[in-house]
Image 1 (cartoon, rainbow, N blue to C red):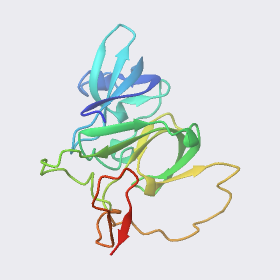
Image 2: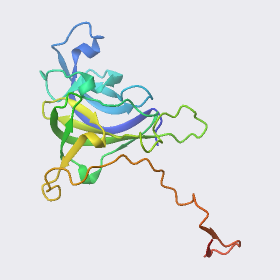
Image 3: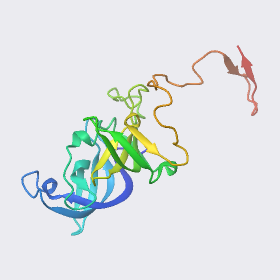
Image 4: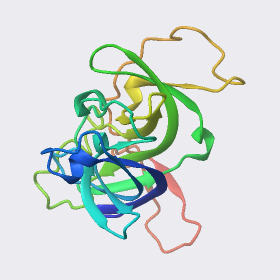
Length: 210
């Protein structure tokens, strides 16, 4: 799993000029770009790398810097991204079953926002010696982040419990089927003394129930 930087499915879009000018000016300018990577640092919003038409490469820009076309009104990043990165170990997956699916999420303001699924960021912490591992391995706290192209032309990153997907042939039930509770369990099949393997070197070893 990549540490710090990871490839993402390339996104051809626009970067807002004010993000290229440290928010000093150029708020009304938009430049074609191609986002090609993500940086994940614990305690910071996911940040993105992109290429511009003049060959310039820019590193670690928040998702609020980008839009799908010129003139899209900027939305505060707090209504685009709910959580910071959980660790520096990030995976990027474009799930085939969710590809191009319509998606709705609930913003901090309570507004329902419509868009389209792009890909998913997920985090873990493989280093057992890393004390400050955040919540990436805590089942009750861990969140993934689904990258969404909003209908208004902005991009957002939202976790599972804030989104709904729409598949006309499968998601056919209205409302909520059951009130879901956060999973707090660590699922481990070797955490009990109910069984053990035979004490020999046989390839097809036996299992003894205790």
